[in-house]
Length: 279
Length: 290
Image 1: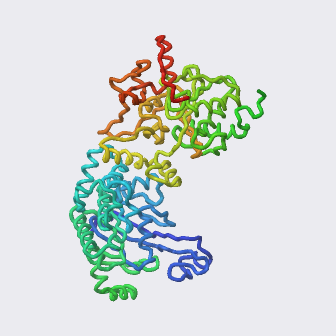
Image 2: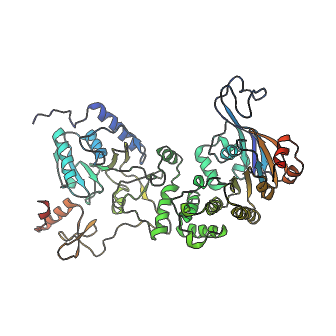
Image 3: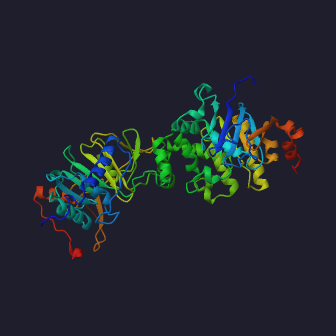
């Protein structure tokens, strides 16, 4: 616990829109939920700060529109932050604010340090390319230029996520939702990233497939010790995966702590409502 | 005939704009410079990009050669030659060594080019990443961020599917250690001719509105994986049926009567000069042309 966190996020802000006199000042802002009724500016993430430690799974839970996915996209540079800082331990000794780096550096961080599994496999995979090719894409991006080695690694990963060998050269568009999701996970893992982002990975999958994907994530964390940030609106998923949990509402963190603690003894009124509505 | 148009068809403003795009292309080897592609007397996709470059760089003392897939006599090559000749009055030739400007579709001549010559290639799809990324907005960004994993992925997929890279033509190249570029649909056989070329090579894509360039003596490397080296088409043990040339790019022809496969130089003017050198008279089938 005394180690330096692998990822530190400080005061991350993301807004859509210019803001106006009523909403620009964070201290006395007049907004409804997360948007300004006057100028329609949306404050998707407001002052988000947290640490991710080595080998830990950190859950982020909250209702639709609470800013979970926006936070994820900002951290993976799919969206530019409005303000804030983040430091990665293995990138320049954790001294550089990654949000201020050039887009070439962002690409480097994505290719070498981060892995991302999107809710929608279309965002993470090239549906018309073979599964092996999809995984190789990430390896190529990380500078590998040996076909045989990449093919071996891809096969090993696909085996790891239980894709039959016979279907390795098939395109993900021919796969079921659960299989697509597992190919995505294999791709994200291909260059052993120290940090993995999982955005609603089980949403839309049926229960038995959900269970196998969750199993897979647990196993990966145990075997490879990868730190993960797991976003979900499903408390059952969070309960199963996360060591610690952050609860978000309207773009803000309203509660955080050990997952058990949050589920057993929620403090904030919204968290209480969320936990008690869990079937 | 009294010329009714400007010299080289274009008004001076158009020429200036295209020359500026060419200069920018030369300054940034392999980078696709957008330009305002003009409406031409031939249809887009028939060499308007190359024609616009030729018309904006040509001068009265130039000698022009136009080839289409290695042939000086194809309809397209002849028409382009006629158009340029009628609007400029410059001399045209089929002799590669005589020409100062060579406009070509899909081939680089067999006779080595010199510093005095400019090669103009017609390009259908200038974007090497188009196959993996349909959005121009995104490919521009990928070039800027030096991310060419898409071009490599295309080759990787071909190896997965066919056991080797399957680019017949237009095999992507890395120019001056920076930009990945589509060399236009020249056969892989011609890729090595761009590397350290003595002649300036200009690429014009009329429909896609892009101009790019390889200045003389620039490093141009064909993309290839470490364990799958770049290979060119081989014609081992084969020779031209007319001039007996080897080590040139050969066309494969099937004799309709006997059903046998024959080979012939793709570069017709090279073949002709070989025949003249040796004083050989060759009979060429022209019946189908009547």
